[in-house]
Image: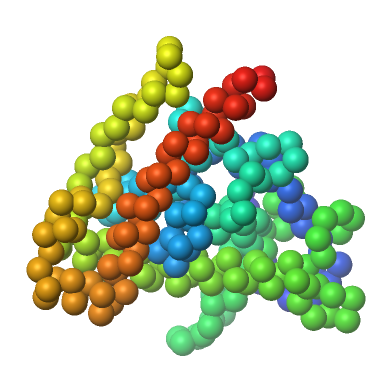
Length: 239
């Protein structure tokens, strides 16, 4: 159960949040939802793949490991990458409308008061002693904006890719050692041949709406599969 509350600097002036990444906080996952608004950062660290949500619509995920509940970026010393996907970096915060919101109301930051990371004793302060936002809360606001704006962009982006025939199934056998390999199935990516064959009108349509660069970022990100294999093997050797 969750207990979301509209964040304010009066009721929550002493609030602190434990910001470390750990299995106990649900970070042992082998993939995480990501958004086009963070593709530029994500593609430097993680493979970006498309999958289908339960409703059948496309969504993008960053691959964090190969086995169930395996996250090769989760280490005792912290997160082993320069950028943490926004869905995980946001911690116990979310964005939404107050219960009594009227039409046109601006989304506000909410905090889950039942989240085990939320307390008044340890962790990063949410507010400054004078009541202003702490640097930590400013970072959270940025991550929530990445998600909020990304949700709006994603549906149109994937629909445009699908309309242009750019989405293709991805089936890859990944060999991580002489005795172990993984079959990546039920994922999709950009069809390089279809991308190369786009005519000028299609390229202009995609570029005009900002939908062309994300396709190249997704393709570029696939080079990070080799990094995942290296990290997994290094962890296995250390264990």
